Amino acid sequence: MSSTDSGRSGPSRRSFLKASLATAGAVAASSLSAPPAVRAASSKELATLLDIRKCIGCEACVDACREVNEAKFPELKAPMPTMYPTSRVKTADWSSPNKRAVQNRLTPYNWLYIQSAEGTYNGKEYSLTMPRRCMHCQNPPCANLCPWGSAFKQENGIVRIDPEMCLGGSKCKSVCPWNIPERQSGVGLYMDILPQYAGNGVMYKCDRCYNRIAQGELPACVEICPEKVQKIGPRDEILKEAHAIAKEINGFIYGEKENGGTNTIYVSPVPFEELNKVIDKGPGRPHLKPVQDSMAQANNLVPALAIAPLAGILGALGRFYKWGRKADKEAKS
Amino acid sequence: MTRTLKWLYIAALAVMAFSGFGQMPIFKRYYLSDIPGFGWAANFYTNLEVHYLAAIVLLAVVFFLVLNWLLGRRGRTRLTGMGLLRGAVLALVLVTGLFMLLKNLSSVSFSQNLVIVMNLAHLGSVMLFLFLALGCLIGRCRWLRPVDQGLQAD
Image 1 (tube, each protein chain N blue to C red):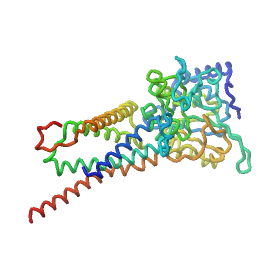
Image 2 (image 1 turned 180 degrees about the vertical axis):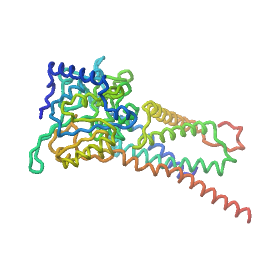
Image 3 (image 1 turned 90 degrees about the vertical axis):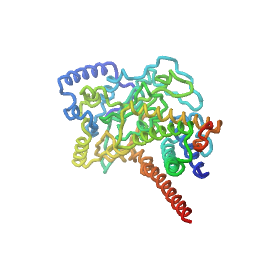
Image 4 (image 1 turned 90 degrees about the horizontal axis):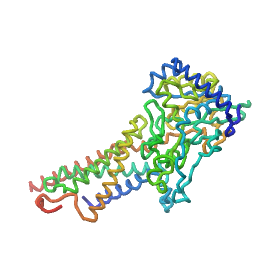
């Protein structure tokens, strides 16, 4: 198990990773990258399976994620604006070299980190680590409730935030059950509109290497893992495999039903309620609690919304019928 | 329009406009949710549910009024120019709102471009409707006019 100190990876490790990814890329080019099921299922929802028994916490996935997504990271081009009201608007700036190097939580420059859990379960001590990032919900509230359409879900189940459109209001983070997206202030579209009075930067999170998947490659974290902790494939197949592993080890699943279903499925030998008690939680460090479907309460009102016009129509017809009968009676008398 | 229906219509529209603007993260930033009794406005989920509840009332009232007019009073009254314009804009608000509602269902998803267009169309049509409503309040223009006064100004 590893510690997850900030800025842990040194230049030599990065060079090693570059070389590893280059090799992996070469292998990918020789068509051994994404399994055929992944490539064929580009329009089907893809899910990832994370068998956390295998994770050794080496952070190779974290480094690979940073490496391949570096071009997508925010770069400040102008001084940070003063945003009003200053007492209410929080500036989130992760752009300094020290903060950019943080790897022990989610940040705009770190879309994946390793969460550690140590404790006792069934009288046995355990020490587990697991990659944490966006869960890629099947009905993502971040995408549903983004007022501009900046957050959206692709056909293949990837949930993304468009950095060209995002205004950094952080609504996606507020409505996310795990508060995953992280803000970088001072960048993005709002800087060209009214930076002092509306918007506050751009929200960043894992995009599950959508561009690599589009080219038939695997997400960097999946590809680089020396222990093959992660796997990607059509959701039904991934779930089948997750249940098979859970049955075999008498284990537990997280992500299948959380928030109405996600495309990130964790399998663990220890119940997630237990893990949730011992993991570090807080800003940039998501929990492992059970999560109800966030959109369910609003969507439960949809039948009433469908009936409302009918109620109006029936009311008007009833009134017309009553008026007609009254007119008939008057004509007869 | 009876007095009750009129107030239901105005109340539903007012609540929808408020909860609709609350979909943008501005109420907390600009202290609106700090007003006593408006704390709920900072919760995006509550805002959405309030928006849906007001939509239920608005849809029932609008469908009742439109059909009531078509069946009973159409021969005696006619839509004014401003009434027609407001009706068309309100229809656009409702249609784009229906799209947003479908988008939020778990079994439905649309392309990002379509969602962006619909978001902007919903917001734009609401803004236009509110400006027209304000203009009509100041100018005292009506939705309908009697047919026998058809040659009079709106």
